[in-house]
Image (cartoon, rainbow over all chains, first blue to last red):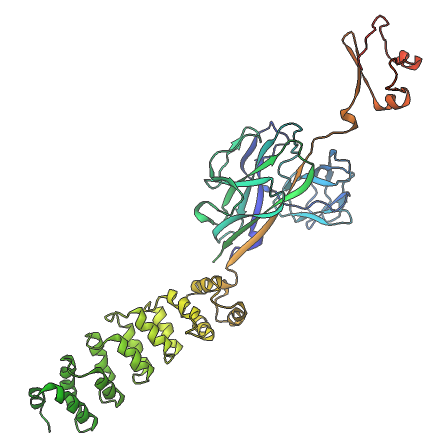
Length: 246
Length: 268
């Protein structure tokens, strides 16, 4: 079966630092995706599953309307919708205590859908959690994600990563690791990773061997540059994965 | 009956024309063909004469094949013969596809430009690699081959689908026409799923430096002891007039802070 868009997924790395001192990067976390939407207004978050077997806990961390971080854990109730007690202006992380039995849908109460957590996966997370600018110095942070081909049989040929000129594109560059499936970590997210094929940049970049075979994944480091006194913003970084399939 | 030896012993320039006219007059039996071949091999008969011979079907096309194979007839001439319909295209196919004949690209173009060859033949030529597929692009670009014709080639799978992609990318095939090509069910389905493109939105926030009321505080120090005056106290209890050189601490505050009266210098 040919590779389709739904086969291509961006996952987080195993280490997801919440500050500038913790370990960052590592191997792929094939259970936590790096893509989701924020609620369009500050609301509670609703969860429901396509499976009655999903009765595990889900932990939600986000910011309230005042910008403060708050967390809570609620218990899923299968196909019945459950809601968080807190309201969230944006979500930072959302993690199930065990892999989903069905497709778990996270939505803003009365507003838009945030994400679907596929079967066996555990949630989603925001790269550069709580990245804070300095008032006096510029700052460069690094975080790692992976692009994976979840197709079980087919290869994505001519696999290329492309930055889209929208959102935080002027603050962020990316670099592809020079070996596939690398588990490189960095001491903290202010430490530059090594082994970046061609260095960091914004231009289209071919993946190692120019392909993503079935189940294969490519590590991608993101480089976030913050100037002194950088203005607070809630935005996004947009990339495209292109290639050909038989 | 004319004898072979008498012809070959005569002056050849005149005999060649005579030979052709004799053959055309249908007075010669089939056996004479062997002598014609010998004459042709001696290159004494102009190509135009051969043309008339072929046209009148006095020389079987099989003989022509052997002549081409033995390089007695330039392959360019085949194009002319084909264009004029003097050689059946089916036979031309076998000639051009014969590995013994090196077909120059220029000759192949001439044949194509003549438009007298059915697409099946061109397809076969492309398939047999006698005509490089790259050439098809330049032919289309130069409009020597109608675009409809190219589509037929693709549909009949005589041109590799990969090359079709290349043609589309280089805009040698108008997009409008592509619709009809794709609509044809003879096109392998993988053409339509050739390119995968997916866009990802990675939500990212930047927390700005916090600068506000909380960043500006009134601090009193005395004998290494520090008191931070909250905004509530500042608003409710104190009325600081910056024009005054002397500020008086109310009795309410004295109940809160143990101020050393011996200090005369308090920092604000």
